[in-house]
Amino acid sequence: MNKYFPGTQALDNVNLDVYEGEIHAICGENGAGKSTLMKILSGVYSHGTYEGQIYYQGNEVKFANVKDSEQLGIRIIYQELTLVPHMTVADNIFLGAEPSRCGVINQNELFSNTEQLLKTYNLDIPYNARVGALGIGQQQMVEIAKALSGNASLLILDEPTSALTIEETNVLMGILRDLRASGVTCIYISHKLDEVFEIADRITVLRDGQVIDTSDIEGLDQNKVISLMVGRELTSQYPPRTKNIGDITFEVKNWTVAKAGNVSRPVVKDVSFDLRKGEILGVSGLMGSGRTELVQSIFGEFGKRISGELVLDGAPVEIRSSQDAISHGIALLTEDRKNTSLVLKHSVLANATLASVKDLLRWRVIDPNKELSITYEYKDRLQIKAPTIHTIVNDLSGGNQQKVAIAKWLLTEPKILIMDEPTRGIDVGTKYEVYRLMNELTSEGVSIIMVSSELPEILGMSDRILVMSEGSVAGIVDNHNVSMETIMMLATKGA
Image (cartoon, rainbow, N blue to C red; front, side):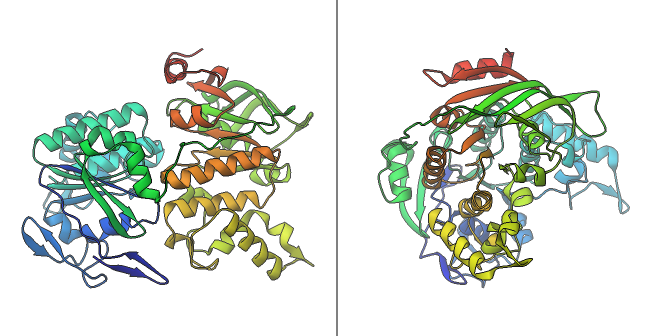
């Protein structure tokens, strides 16, 4: 299989075989070609747009579109959600395949079928809920249910747990084991190697569009897979850091926030904490604990503040919008880079300078030379892999999109950088680069608040850890011999 895009070869003579009834993992860095290969196998890229052949159950197949592959029982769950937010869970799951009579959708049968499907796979989601009102993790479970509704014989999962809690991930693992026992074949793409080693039978490693190795799981360990992925040995998952933590630079006092239109039920309740210069404060907690609502409200872009105070460098500050936050030196890397961090149809240059346009003005007009030079500087600093700075961001891999989003905020020269799920959906090599950058920033005096669902990341990078439970602070602990069990106990049981 060969696949070309303008300026790059995404797949270079790739050969892959998958056995019936196995779970076959595909691993590789962002940009290795994993998602491109899966889009070919599922008909997203039609026959004729690539070189090579696909054989399914012994027969050569040629897909003109996704519908062709679905008719053979091939279903794909994308890393990026493909749901209609204004429709219900039931409507999304059976979109295009609704039960009907005389051309009219049978709502009772639709809801009944959805309820039975959710019950079969132990998915705790209301069938009649509007998808846009659900959290990212629940939306991902709806995607999974949608794929399973079509009696799949080959299920392709592209980073299916990137937005799931530990409990939801365990549910998915159980579903995959049941599917394997019933003869369903699965191709599983994930950067989370602990999941891969828990569930996969074989692993294929891609690097720079080529197959590097395919082996049974028993003959591998995580360090070996990482070295195959990145082409070098990583002695540690987290880079070493020389700490230089100073005085308190930011304080949040008695912070209470509710959703607009529902002020009687706050989602952030009386939260207080401080942040020191050069410190990484990790924020942990289960999905729904109020982590994202906390940081978005501090940034001026969520809900209605009922009460509380923000203090920056000893002086109270009022933040009513992201513009206020940026003017005070606060930046927020959001958890959803596609929808709230980047303008996908614009270039690397346009996205990187989006939040710092005022600094590029000369006589009220953007200085093109300064714009180009600073974008090239951060492209090199963050090692953004793009043919040029004029490349459209949507054409980049997830990891390089994340680097562009980070560059956008670094150009504002923040005092406080809030990072919500900074490594979601990116590979181990790119994660290491992000961690190295975070260490570099703290050594320069930048303070970081890092929200993460990954406990190893929280423990590996944080100086202190703020644990949230049901909108409140369950505890703030120094990261010194703290265990995952301690964090989970605080997150599940409260203070």
